Image 1 (cartoon, helix red, strand yellow):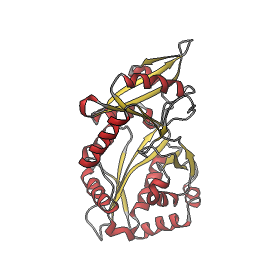
Image 2: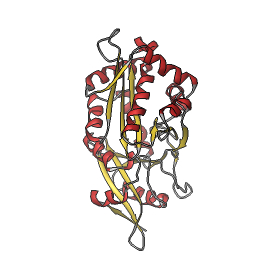
Image 3: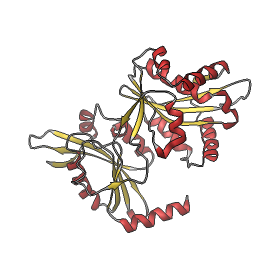
Image 4: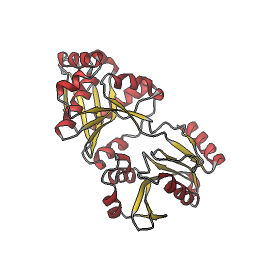
Length: 310
């Protein structure tokens, strides 16, 4: 089997069932953020493409790079395509390569568990083919109660294009919970480049003229995704984030989605995981994110520099 570069048209034909992160939509989003991309396929002896991968390349000082295959590769020969992509990465001043696909033979690939925690090993998925009553019934009691409480508190949730309000909420959430956020342009480009992405804002006119919580989601194939969330802690008793999730589920259901993906749970996201678990659903394994460290010393230096700057 041989590694080949694919055109967008070639990739589109074989990636119709790919997860969002291995789609051409995601490639478009990454390019808008200034990253390089490559589309690879593994050609078999009968000239079919057995396995494919979207590679995101993030460059840093001196032309050094980090390669990422988010939630991929896709196909039965994932270990083989990674082995060949590693050889390509070595030619390109790559310090490390990350991947998180299934069907992997880790004896074939010299790798270790990633310490980035960007791609969760598990996610929580809700069946949207059930009726609204059934979706509510499978939630934890606290989840149902807080949705009803938000309704009682007259929380209004609407689709919006007001990215400034969302980013203001995100800045407050970041300061409260101590995590880093991207520049506002990152979220703008997500909404611009990812088809069927959407922004929901929650308001309560009696207490605030501005939004008190927000959610950015996306629809890919027949799945709706919860991607980013933010809220104003001052109004936490109104339960606006619960109203947002319930609205997002119903919106995705109306658009024909079969499932709603709450996008990652685990010990590294304990607070967020507790919140997501209130909505029920089933746990889906996504595959452990792995790292191939090609230039360990240089990567260590760059990582230290980034921690000092950011």
